[in-house]
View (cartoon, rainbow, N blue to C red):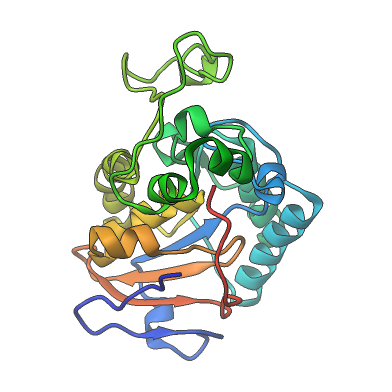
Length: 265
Protein backbone atom coordinates (compact mmCIF):
# COMPACT_ATOMS: atom_id res chain seq x y z
CA UNK A 1 0.00 0.00 0.00
CA UNK A 2 1.12 3.59 0.50
CA UNK A 3 4.58 4.70 1.52
CA UNK A 4 5.87 7.65 3.50
CA UNK A 5 6.29 10.76 1.38
CA UNK A 6 8.95 13.41 2.00
CA UNK A 7 8.19 16.55 3.92
CA UNK A 8 8.58 19.85 2.12
CA UNK A 9 11.88 21.11 3.54
CA UNK A 10 15.39 19.61 3.39
CA UNK A 11 14.13 16.07 3.81
CA UNK A 12 16.29 12.96 3.61
CA UNK A 13 14.42 9.68 3.38
CA UNK A 14 16.78 6.76 3.49
CA UNK A 15 17.29 3.30 4.95
CA UNK A 16 20.17 1.57 6.68
CA UNK A 17 22.60 2.94 9.24
CA UNK A 18 22.49 6.64 10.05
CA UNK A 19 25.87 6.54 11.81
CA UNK A 20 27.43 9.07 9.45
CA UNK A 21 24.48 11.45 9.21
CA UNK A 22 25.17 14.74 10.95
CA UNK A 23 21.57 15.03 12.11
CA UNK A 24 21.96 11.90 14.26
CA UNK A 25 23.53 13.99 17.02
CA UNK A 26 20.95 16.77 16.92
CA UNK A 27 18.89 17.36 20.04
CA UNK A 28 15.43 17.16 18.48
CA UNK A 29 14.71 13.52 17.72
CA UNK A 30 11.82 11.06 17.94
CA UNK A 31 11.60 7.30 17.32
CA UNK A 32 8.29 5.63 16.46
CA UNK A 33 7.84 1.85 16.67
CA UNK A 34 4.72 -0.18 15.97
CA UNK A 35 4.23 -2.98 18.50
CA UNK A 36 5.13 -6.56 17.64
CA UNK A 37 2.58 -8.90 16.08
CA UNK A 38 -0.37 -9.61 18.37
CA UNK A 39 -2.41 -12.81 18.60
CA UNK A 40 -5.32 -11.18 16.79
CA UNK A 41 -3.02 -9.68 14.14
CA UNK A 42 -1.91 -13.24 13.45
CA UNK A 43 -5.50 -14.52 13.34
CA UNK A 44 -6.79 -11.71 11.11
CA UNK A 45 -9.21 -10.25 13.70
CA UNK A 46 -10.14 -6.61 14.19
CA UNK A 47 -8.50 -5.78 17.51
CA UNK A 48 -9.00 -2.12 18.35
CA UNK A 49 -9.16 -1.48 22.09
CA UNK A 50 -9.32 -5.18 23.08
CA UNK A 51 -6.28 -5.98 25.22
CA UNK A 52 -4.59 -8.75 23.24
CA UNK A 53 -1.05 -9.97 23.93
CA UNK A 54 1.91 -10.51 21.61
CA UNK A 55 2.66 -13.70 19.73
CA UNK A 56 6.07 -15.35 20.06
CA UNK A 57 6.96 -13.68 16.74
CA UNK A 58 5.73 -10.37 18.13
CA UNK A 59 8.10 -10.69 21.10
CA UNK A 60 10.97 -11.31 18.69
CA UNK A 61 9.97 -8.30 16.56
CA UNK A 62 9.98 -6.03 19.61
CA UNK A 63 13.34 -7.34 20.80
CA UNK A 64 14.73 -6.90 17.30
CA UNK A 65 13.62 -3.25 17.32
CA UNK A 66 15.53 -2.78 20.56
CA UNK A 67 18.60 -4.49 19.11
CA UNK A 68 18.54 -2.18 16.07
CA UNK A 69 18.34 0.91 18.28
CA UNK A 70 21.07 -0.40 20.57
CA UNK A 71 23.34 -1.03 17.60
CA UNK A 72 22.88 2.60 16.57
CA UNK A 73 23.66 3.80 20.10
CA UNK A 74 20.31 5.46 20.83
CA UNK A 75 19.72 6.98 24.26
CA UNK A 76 16.24 8.12 25.31
CA UNK A 77 14.87 10.39 28.02
CA UNK A 78 11.18 9.45 27.90
CA UNK A 79 9.10 6.56 26.56
CA UNK A 80 5.41 6.71 25.69
CA UNK A 81 2.99 3.93 24.93
CA UNK A 82 -0.72 3.15 24.96
CA UNK A 83 -2.85 1.46 27.62
CA UNK A 84 -2.84 -1.87 25.73
CA UNK A 85 -0.50 -4.73 26.61
CA UNK A 86 0.71 -5.49 23.07
CA UNK A 87 2.16 -1.99 22.93
CA UNK A 88 3.19 -1.86 26.60
CA UNK A 89 5.07 -5.16 26.42
CA UNK A 90 6.73 -4.18 23.16
CA UNK A 91 8.00 -0.98 24.80
CA UNK A 92 9.33 -2.95 27.78
CA UNK A 93 11.16 -5.38 25.48
CA UNK A 94 12.67 -2.56 23.40
CA UNK A 95 13.94 -0.74 26.50
CA UNK A 96 15.27 -4.00 27.94
CA UNK A 97 17.36 -4.56 24.81
CA UNK A 98 18.60 -0.97 25.12
CA UNK A 99 19.43 -1.45 28.84
CA UNK A 100 17.26 1.61 29.46
CA UNK A 101 14.43 0.03 31.44
CA UNK A 102 14.95 2.76 34.04
CA UNK A 103 13.67 5.67 31.94
CA UNK A 104 10.11 6.95 32.63
CA UNK A 105 7.40 5.16 30.64
CA UNK A 106 4.13 7.07 30.30
CA UNK A 107 0.89 5.35 29.27
CA UNK A 108 -1.58 7.54 27.40
CA UNK A 109 -5.02 6.40 26.23
CA UNK A 110 -4.79 8.75 23.25
CA UNK A 111 -2.11 6.43 21.82
CA UNK A 112 -4.54 3.47 21.80
CA UNK A 113 -5.36 1.75 18.53
CA UNK A 114 -8.32 2.93 16.48
CA UNK A 115 -11.60 1.63 17.95
CA UNK A 116 -13.24 -0.71 15.43
CA UNK A 117 -16.70 -0.68 16.98
CA UNK A 118 -18.86 -3.73 16.35
CA UNK A 119 -16.13 -5.19 14.11
CA UNK A 120 -14.01 -5.74 17.24
CA UNK A 121 -13.07 -9.40 17.60
CA UNK A 122 -14.45 -10.41 14.22
CA UNK A 123 -12.35 -12.17 11.63
CA UNK A 124 -11.87 -10.10 8.50
CA UNK A 125 -13.43 -12.91 6.46
CA UNK A 126 -16.42 -13.01 8.83
CA UNK A 127 -16.92 -9.26 8.50
CA UNK A 128 -16.80 -9.53 4.70
CA UNK A 129 -19.50 -12.25 4.75
CA UNK A 130 -21.70 -10.06 6.97
CA UNK A 131 -21.22 -6.62 5.40
CA UNK A 132 -19.67 -7.26 1.98
CA UNK A 133 -16.11 -6.79 0.80
CA UNK A 134 -16.50 -3.20 -0.43
CA UNK A 135 -18.08 -2.03 2.81
CA UNK A 136 -15.34 -3.63 4.93
CA UNK A 137 -12.66 -2.15 2.66
CA UNK A 138 -14.29 1.27 3.01
CA UNK A 139 -14.23 0.98 6.82
CA UNK A 140 -10.64 -0.18 6.87
CA UNK A 141 -9.08 2.06 4.25
CA UNK A 142 -11.10 5.26 3.96
CA UNK A 143 -10.39 8.28 6.15
CA UNK A 144 -13.97 8.85 7.34
CA UNK A 145 -15.30 5.29 7.29
CA UNK A 146 -17.09 4.58 10.59
CA UNK A 147 -17.87 0.95 11.54
CA UNK A 148 -21.09 0.25 13.45
CA UNK A 149 -20.67 1.14 17.15
CA UNK A 150 -20.43 -1.46 19.88
CA UNK A 151 -23.92 -1.73 21.42
CA UNK A 152 -24.47 -0.23 24.87
CA UNK A 153 -23.79 -2.86 27.53
CA UNK A 154 -21.80 -5.08 25.16
CA UNK A 155 -18.99 -6.94 27.03
CA UNK A 156 -16.51 -5.48 24.53
CA UNK A 157 -17.32 -1.96 25.78
CA UNK A 158 -14.34 -0.76 27.86
CA UNK A 159 -15.96 2.38 29.26
CA UNK A 160 -16.13 0.74 32.70
CA UNK A 161 -12.50 -0.46 32.66
CA UNK A 162 -10.69 1.17 35.57
CA UNK A 163 -7.59 1.88 33.47
CA UNK A 164 -9.69 4.57 31.76
CA UNK A 165 -11.20 6.07 34.92
CA UNK A 166 -9.23 9.30 34.40
CA UNK A 167 -10.54 9.79 30.83
CA UNK A 168 -13.14 12.62 30.62
CA UNK A 169 -16.77 11.51 30.48
CA UNK A 170 -17.93 10.75 26.98
CA UNK A 171 -14.42 10.42 25.52
CA UNK A 172 -14.24 6.59 25.48
CA UNK A 173 -15.35 5.68 21.93
CA UNK A 174 -17.69 2.89 20.86
CA UNK A 175 -16.40 3.20 17.27
CA UNK A 176 -13.92 5.43 15.43
CA UNK A 177 -12.97 6.46 11.93
CA UNK A 178 -9.34 7.15 11.07
CA UNK A 179 -10.30 10.85 11.20
CA UNK A 180 -11.43 10.38 14.82
CA UNK A 181 -8.17 8.63 15.66
CA UNK A 182 -6.13 11.47 14.17
CA UNK A 183 -8.08 13.97 16.31
CA UNK A 184 -7.18 12.33 19.62
CA UNK A 185 -3.60 11.58 18.59
CA UNK A 186 -3.29 15.27 17.66
CA UNK A 187 -4.07 16.19 21.28
CA UNK A 188 -1.15 14.05 22.42
CA UNK A 189 1.19 15.27 19.67
CA UNK A 190 0.53 18.98 20.22
CA UNK A 191 0.15 18.92 23.98
CA UNK A 192 2.70 16.31 25.08
CA UNK A 193 5.18 15.17 22.43
CA UNK A 194 6.00 18.50 20.75
CA UNK A 195 6.81 20.37 23.98
CA UNK A 196 9.02 17.48 25.14
CA UNK A 197 10.90 17.37 21.82
CA UNK A 198 11.37 21.15 21.78
CA UNK A 199 12.85 20.94 25.29
CA UNK A 200 15.58 18.66 23.89
CA UNK A 201 14.27 15.37 25.30
CA UNK A 202 14.63 12.32 23.08
CA UNK A 203 11.40 10.32 22.88
CA UNK A 204 10.52 6.80 21.88
CA UNK A 205 6.85 6.09 21.21
CA UNK A 206 5.67 2.50 20.87
CA UNK A 207 2.16 2.44 19.47
CA UNK A 208 -0.32 0.89 17.08
CA UNK A 209 -0.76 0.88 13.33
CA UNK A 210 -3.53 3.46 13.07
CA UNK A 211 -2.22 5.63 15.90
CA UNK A 212 1.17 5.86 14.23
CA UNK A 213 -0.41 6.51 10.84
CA UNK A 214 -2.17 9.42 12.55
CA UNK A 215 1.05 10.76 14.05
CA UNK A 216 2.91 10.48 10.76
CA UNK A 217 0.09 12.45 9.08
CA UNK A 218 0.51 15.21 11.65
CA UNK A 219 4.31 15.31 11.34
CA UNK A 220 4.60 15.01 7.55
CA UNK A 221 1.45 16.88 6.57
CA UNK A 222 0.01 13.94 4.63
CA UNK A 223 -3.33 14.27 2.91
CA UNK A 224 -6.32 12.32 4.22
CA UNK A 225 -6.02 9.88 1.32
CA UNK A 226 -2.27 9.36 1.80
CA UNK A 227 -2.88 8.67 5.48
CA UNK A 228 -5.58 6.11 4.75
CA UNK A 229 -3.21 4.23 2.41
CA UNK A 230 -0.15 4.33 4.66
CA UNK A 231 1.25 1.13 6.17
CA UNK A 232 3.46 0.95 9.26
CA UNK A 233 5.41 -2.32 9.69
CA UNK A 234 5.62 -4.10 13.03
CA UNK A 235 8.80 -3.62 15.05
CA UNK A 236 10.64 -1.34 12.61
CA UNK A 237 12.08 1.84 14.22
CA UNK A 238 11.21 5.01 12.30
CA UNK A 239 13.39 7.99 13.24
CA UNK A 240 12.48 11.66 12.84
CA UNK A 241 14.75 14.68 13.33
CA UNK A 242 13.27 18.14 13.82
CA UNK A 243 14.32 21.74 13.94
CA UNK A 244 13.75 23.81 17.09
CA UNK A 245 10.17 24.51 16.00
CA UNK A 246 9.38 20.78 15.67
CA UNK A 247 9.34 20.86 11.88
CA UNK A 248 10.72 17.61 10.40
CA UNK A 249 14.11 17.88 8.72
CA UNK A 250 14.98 14.22 8.21
CA UNK A 251 13.39 10.79 8.54
CA UNK A 252 14.44 7.19 8.02
CA UNK A 253 13.71 3.61 8.92
CA UNK A 254 16.78 2.17 10.60
CA UNK A 255 16.36 -0.90 8.40
CA UNK A 256 14.40 -1.14 5.17
CA UNK A 257 10.85 -2.47 5.77
CA UNK A 258 9.94 -5.69 3.99
CA UNK A 259 7.65 -4.83 1.04
CA UNK A 260 4.00 -5.77 1.38
CA UNK A 261 0.87 -4.76 3.26
CA UNK A 262 0.99 -4.48 7.03
CA UNK A 263 -1.90 -6.17 8.80
CA UNK A 264 -3.65 -3.09 10.21
CA UNK A 265 -6.70 -4.45 12.00
